[in-house]
Length: 216
Image (cartoon, rainbow, N blue to C red; front, top):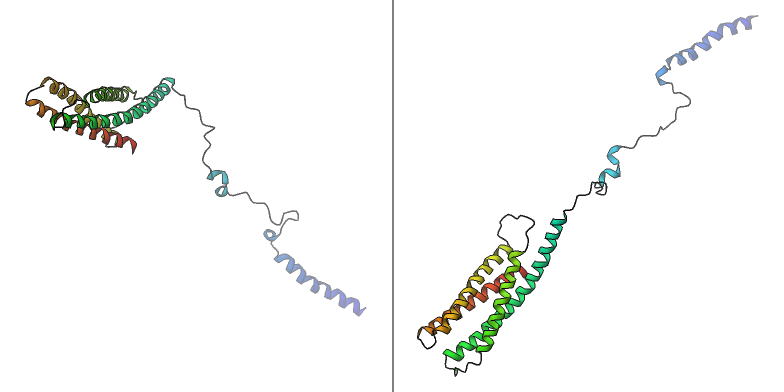
C-alpha cells in the first residue's frame, strides 16, 4: 500500500521537467518535417554569361543599300586605281623626258656638236608624258565623290598641292618650249631654253613628291 502511494506522488515530479522542456521549444524553432534541408537557390543575374556577350547583329534590321551610291563608290575605286597606275607611268615618262631634254640641251647649247640627234626623242617623250599627265589628272578630277570629307592636312591634300604645282610646270614647259623654237637664231633663245630646263626639274620634283604622297 505504501509503495503505491509513493509511486503516485513521484509521477507529477518526474513529468514536470519534461513539460518545462517541451514548453521552452517555441513554434518558430520548429521545422516542418517535409522541408528540404538545403533548398535550391535561384542563379544570380550578375553571373549570367549571356550578359557578357555583345548583342547579336543578326537580329538587327538590315540597312537598305543605295544602288546609286554603290555604283558611285565602285566607279571611284576603279578610276582612282587607274589614276594611280597611270601616275607612276607618267612619273617614269617625265624622268625619261628630263634626261633626254638635258642631253638635247647640252648637244645644242654646250658645244657638243649641235647634231640634233636627241630632238626627235625629246619631242616624242614630251608628247607621251603630256598625254599621260593629262589623262591621269582627268581621272583624278572626274572621279565621283559619294562622301563629303572635311578639309584636313593629310597625304591626299599634299598630293593635290604637289600635282597643282606640276600642272603649272607642265603648262609653263609647253609655252616655253614653243617660244624657244620660235626664237631660233636669237640670243634670247638660250635664256628661254635654260628657263625651260629649270622648270622641267621643278615639275619633275613636284610629280615625284606627289607620287610619294600616294605610295606612302
